[in-house]
Structures are given as structure tokens and as C-alpha cells.
Image (cartoon, rainbow over all chains, first blue to last red; front, side, top):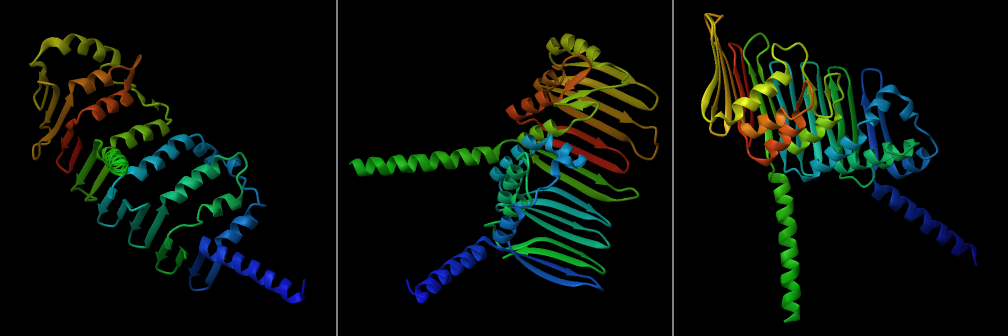
Length: 172
Length: 184
């Protein structure tokens, strides 16, 4: 085996890994405020891999512990959301506040507008499904949570904008 | 021939699966609309499939609301008394069961066909009359009162609503607030 063949094999493996990482998606976190300008691209597959070594202390948090009591009902709600047609589930329209929760395609959209903040959240239902499976594990890891974002349709997941600050998490 | 039969079978399977998906999406929905005109005017609209409300009810674990059973505290009439009263009135046919006429309040409870109607008119506020109209199918009242002790069985009531399209369930007309709850 020549050095050339070894290098070629190595190159193929690296390209395959890059292809997998890109195809699984890249999460981009952007934070803009007067003091900070952050732009962090995170290959989700890599986050999944590294995160598998970090245990999440989720079940120990009192709020999470309480939520875990309802996980079967929550999973059932997510399952039923898949069957719904596109619709607006909740709409609050007040002078200083507008809230809308709707289902479009295979995602749940939440938008909140008030005089100071604007929040847009898109939850792909497949992500919610996987999240339910992840928190159902006795010892979920950071990797399990990151894995929920793999293979999802591109676009913004979260966008929070206020007068001085903007946070945007997108998947590409 | 075999090929045609196979294609027909595939087509039937596809149509059946589409039909199942449409039926699931088409189940009854619960709608709530609250319109406020007072200090903080605005509207709140909630549209949810009854089956989803049913599942969400399982998530609520409150002192008075557990597993879809609502425990009523401090009411003028207990659930046991309601149940007893309903047992006697249910088979009376179309009739006005209760009429309370006070100086500034009128309460009427009657049955019209398959519905129980509760109408409350309050004229304490001379400028605007406060009206509460409740129209509930008999089967839903039956289900609601099917719980044990002093509990209203909300889960059974929802199942009953799911079985038949209940239409308007509740409307409240107050001077500054309008509430409408219906199922279709």
C-alpha cells in the first residue's frame, strides 16, 4: 500500500464525514447586542457526537421533573399535531400584545409581539417527537438534545428581537 | 388481469389511508372566543381539536382538577344534589325546570329537545344587561354528572361532545366581555 493510497483513503473518509456533517445540518447561532456580535456555526452531527459524553442533569431539575410526569400526554399531543391540517390554534390580539400559535406544514409556529420584544419560534414536529424520546431516557445527554435538530428543514428556529438585542438560531 | 387487480388494490389502500387521515383531521373542534372592550380591549381565540383538549386534560394535576375530574368547592348546590335533581328532571321532556325571578336577576333552566338551556339575565347594572346563555346537549350533562362524589366528569363530557357535534355550548354577554364556546 503506497502512501498515495493511504492519503486517498483518508481524504475519502474526511470528505464523507464532512458530507455527513453538512447534510445533517449546521446550526448557526447569532447574537447581536451593543457589546457582543457572535456568529457561531455548529455542525449538528458534531454537537451530537461530542454532546453524547455530557450528561444532562435534566431529571434532577424540579421543573423538568414535574414536566416528566406529563411526558406521555405531551408525546400524545405532539403525535396528534401531526394529524392536524394547517390552522391557527391560539390567537391573542390585544392593544399591546399579539400572540399566535399555529401549525403550518410539519412545524408549529409561535409568534409573540409586544412593544419591546418580538419572538418567532418554529418547532419542527419531528424535533418535538425526538425531544420526547430524548427526555424519556433515564440519563439523557446534551447529544440527545442536539440530535433532535438533525435532518430538519432549513430556516430559523428561534428569533428574538428587542430594542437593543437580537438572537437568532437557524438551521442550514 | 392480475396486474389490474394489483393496481386496484394499491389504489384502494391509498384511498383508505387518505380517508383515515382526513377523518382524523376532521374530528370535532372546540372553539373559544373572548372579546373584551373594557380597560384592556382585545380578542382571544382558541381553536383546538376536542381530542387534543382531552389529552391536555390528562396533563393538568391541580388540587381540584385531576384526571379530567373537576372537584367543586363552596358552591350553593353540590354536585351530588345536581346529580339527584338531574336524575329526576331528565325524563320530564320539554319543560321549564327552574325559574328564579328576582328584582334584578332572572334565571331559567329548561329543556328543549336534546338540549338543556340555562339563561341568566342580570340587570344590576342599569346601563347594560349581563347575559349568560348555556346550551348543553343532554348527553353531555349526563356525562358531566357521571363522576363520583362532588366531582364533575369533564373527560366524559368531552367524550360525549366528541361523539356528536354539540354546537354552541356557552355564551356570556357582559357589558365589556363577550365569551363564546362552541364545538363543530
